[in-house]
Length: 264
Image (cartoon, rainbow, N blue to C red; front, side, top):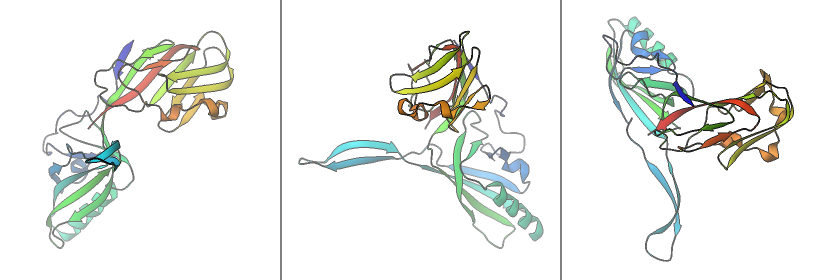
C-alpha cells in the first residue's frame, strides 16, 4: 500500500517582494496580479466556534444533544496605493473582479500546504477618495476546515487507511476501481460498516469504475453509470473516513482512494 501526494508545486515561501501572508484566491495571487495591492495582516485563520444543541433538563444546566463547528470568517487587511485616480480605479476594479465567485479555493503564502474554501462576503475601502487606502477583505468559510494536499492510497480489493493525520472524520474525494479478470453483474463497494455503493449491470473484465464523491458522479470506462446504482442499497455519497477505515470491493483487482486531510 502506498501513499502519494499531489499539489506539491505550490510555492513554499513568499516570493521576493511579496508579503509573508500574501493571498492567493481562486488560483491568482493578488499581489502578483495587482501591483498596487499589498497584504498587511490576516486575522481569523486559527479561530473556531462550536454551536451546542441542548434541551431543558429537570436538574441544573441543560441536557446536551449534539454540537457542530460553525462557519469561520477570515479578514485580510490590505493597502492599495496608486499615483493617479485612474490607476487606483483600475486596480480596485480589478481587485473586485478577482474576488468574485462562490466557494473558491484560497491559501496564504506562509501556509501553502493547506487550502481553504470560501466566499468573499465583504470588501471595504476604509478611505474613500484617497489614493492610498487601507481596506479589508472578508472571506466566509462555510466549510471551517483547511484542507491539506491530496493523498492517494492504492490497494487491491481492500484499501486500509492508517493515516495518523486523520484527526477528524472527513469525506473521500474519489475512489477508482479496476475490475478483475472476470466480468461481473454486480459491484459492491463499502467503506467501513456504514457506507456502501451497489451497482447492477454488465461490468466487463478490466473495466475502470470512477466514483467522484465531490461532484456525485459515477462512470464506467468514461461513461456515466449513475443508472446502475441500486439506490435502496447505496449511501456512499455521504460517506466519511477516519484513521482505521477500510475500503472494500471484492470485484476489484486494484483500487485507488483519494482524499485530503482536513484540520481546523
